[in-house]
Length: 127
Image 1 (tube, rainbow, N blue to C red):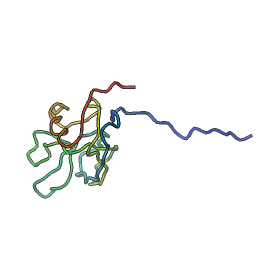
Image 2: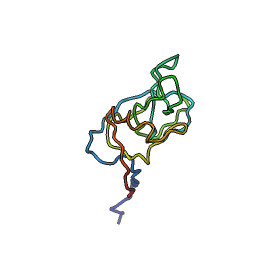
Image 3: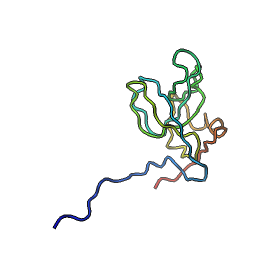
């Protein structure tokens, strides 16, 4: 007799999203090429000057091209060998310990700006 139950895969929670108390909204973003493999939960800044204006890169408060200000959070792992369009969270309630920043930035560096955008941070207990 054929097997009636088949395991097609599994889900391992990454503990990025705290809860649904704040609506989770997304947008499409164009990621700049050459950033390597970016992980889900990477905080992005938008370049506002120069020839790459409008592209998103890993936020780093030392950047002076506009991308030093947090704008959104990457929703999926993405390889940026070339410029690519990806999905990013524009609002929601996220685990500060699961976020990825550029340079020596931390959640504390960008929390006030993220809150203005509707992105709220908490210390979430992993499960």
